[in-house]
Amino acid sequence: MKIIRLEEKEQFDIAPSVGTIGFFDGLHLGHQYLIRKVIAEASKAQLDTTIVTFDRHPLEVICPERCPRLLFTLNEKIERLSQMGVKNVVVLPFNKALAALTAQDFMTTILKAQLHIEKLIIGYDNRFGKDRLDRLEDYVETGKKADIEVIQNNAFEIKNIKVSSSVIRAYIEKGDLAQANFCLNRPYSLHGTVVAGYQNGHKLGFPTANIKPLNMHKILPPAGVYAVNVRLETNSLPLNGMLNIGMRPTFNGQEESIEVHIFDFEGDLYGKVIEIIFFNRIRDEKKFASHDDLAAQLRYDKKQIIDFFQPNKHKK
Image (tube, rainbow, N blue to C red; front, side, top):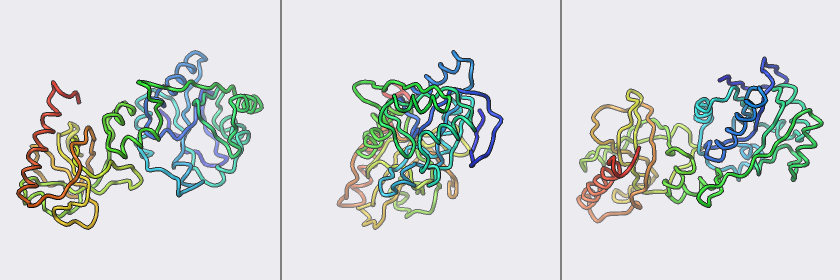
């Protein structure tokens, strides 16, 4: 797969292709459905495939106060696209100049002149360009002027869910990881660096790694206890664990923390980058009357998570 980071007026040796455009946050089932359509159309027309995306969410430039938390970092998106069999991934720097382009200018000067896209497949609700045309027919006519055939893909719906990035964010925000993971077609994950913590878990018999997310723009589930897998830098096989997000109310905590207890693991992780893979929300965070009560609850939580990850109860 070729990764192209496009700068203004730059030219690339790129073959004519079938393309699509979008931010593709999460590369969920709906996005996968669209990209499979691009690949199928390219195969039929004997053209390459080109996925056009952006280095940041467009709302970060257009309306920062409305910009959502992210499901994917750019690197995660590129990694997933590389697994889907596309030929080219083009990353556009989304800035005020790009935001000011009309759909006609964008299709003519970038999609056609620079990227040599012959056919453009757009999502059922995709709108682009400063003028944000309302009707598919408008994009078809605009495409004709740029010598690009525009094709609209159907909406993707499964189990009465019209899958979208915003729907998945809503699931994560309320702690429904099962539904979020179903729509993503993979478990939601977060990369972070292990930093110095408060050592409270160690005192309770549950030593934890305190996590600082690598990307503070990624969405977090609500406070609570979660069944997770942890992938270490030195071990590609994930380990089971339980993670707490919250204020540590039993210890009168003053700021939110993310702490994970990794089952059957001993070692120094300070300064290491680990991946937290979310599977299920076990319970809300709560304040306990004593540290002993909290320790008893943690033992019960751990048993629940071990049961959850049993092969006959859950497929990793």
